[in-house]
Image 1 (cartoon, rainbow, N blue to C red):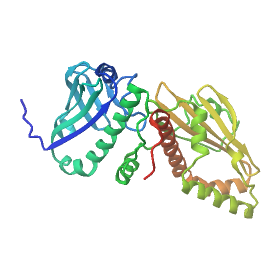
Image 2 (cartoon, one colour):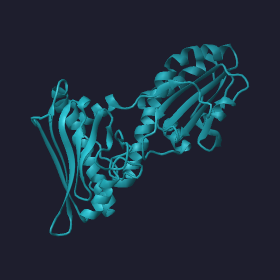
Image 3 (cartoon, rainbow, N blue to C red):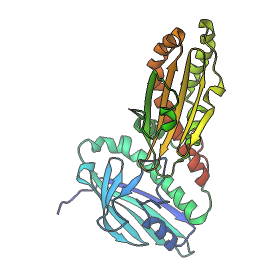
Image 4 (cartoon, helix red, strand yellow):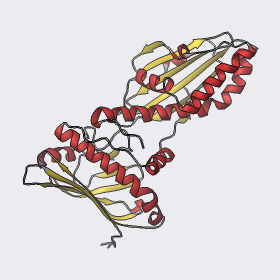
Length: 332
């Protein structure tokens, strides 16, 4: 048997005004489709290959582990996988208190290996601490129906999350995006970017469309304002907010866009729950020389803009879900 010298001792505790049985029921659903404890969709989801039981294997993101001990309603221990860079375990325990409440505890006892010796204090620990506190907030809300005090991530955690957050990937316009594929008889440009759906996030394509186009990143808004101030100089119509109005919809997909003298464009937002993805497709029809010149410039920035808008939309929808459960996060 491999012996690990524990160099990492990390413990979080929260008194929850609910009996151990209630917290035990929440813990039993960890890693499954009915998981109300793990802080989805703001964090990488915890997934196990079977219901919580000894031998269940999975993890969240690059952190892999398997259930080595499980006492329903009292304790579950996860042994870290060999490739995780940590030798040891993390576990949840639930202890009854005399007043009928419970002590919920999460503990790590592990020895970092290789690059994890450096990554633990700089990256893994601050991310882990923020995640567990969010999980405890979920436990409080789910067990008592009360919202815990609003919390905030540290500036360092916010930076780490920004660096590590999921990136939209380029892809062809999906076959399922029928509104996009039939928008024009002739198309001069067609492209798409896709992002994975995290558990708990909205699957309403109109909500995604509103989050993408009505609340873009500040630098994208600055580019749009610059565009509005310059296009009139070369005889191109200004757009405005109506350019992102919904013009068609069907289950799972909405289509936005407008027609102009120089070009016509449509943007499709397709949410596919089966594949767990949201895809933003753009199709463009160029009407004249001004349109071709305009698109020759705009297409250079288009991928960066679309990726940024999709990522921000995912962040905003995740934060909205959290606010509905445990209150809005304070800024800091």
